[in-house]
Length: 306
Image: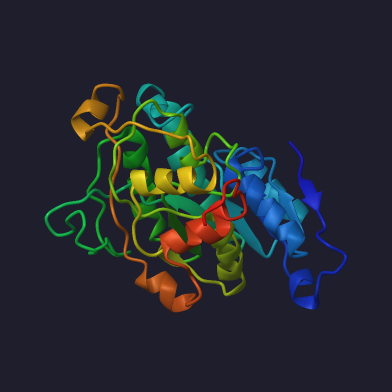
């Protein structure tokens, strides 16, 4: 498979022209958004056509694109959800472990930084990080959630990637964007569920954080980063905003974790991540509820909030 190249805006400044991004995950949600944000900023980029587990194809992509940075937004999350991974374990390992490690290794051999969109769904509230305490898991904490095979593979590969000094691991959680029609959007998902749990969680507002990931590449940042907005927000708080800004007639029903367990195959991760490291690097980063209003609900507003 060949590369798909975009040259960026003609208004690109010298800084943008000195960059060239190679992005994996063209057909995915985050990969598609990342390309759009690059184009808006005049940053030249190409989408990799190689399979992540195929070293020769990755090397060919890099030789053809001659990038300054590589972004990995590819991988397997499962359709319609992570329960798919429970019955497709080899495919999940091939993409999430073998593929990601191969790409990291090829990038290292080429002297390139790899920005890897990973997951923060490798933790769950525990005695040291109780729900509602405001005590979040830090970058150096050991993952404690092994409820789903998807999360197991993500925790495995995160630990192995710490040996690669060229990798920037971004722990994304319950991603949300302003596109409320996208079925991968956490808000879209929960508005379509018959019933939802109501648990505060750290979440990632892509409209705000994907541009920050581009800036992180420019700064050549590496290591593990909790890649969520500061604070937590619950399912009900989001649905209340949805009702207030989008659909005044919207209603929903809650159920307990025990009731949820009866209709899913694998347990789900619920946690709060500590974002002090990211906030120190990017002081402008908005708290989760403020970011939801600014980047998601106000642009989509269909009702009067007065």
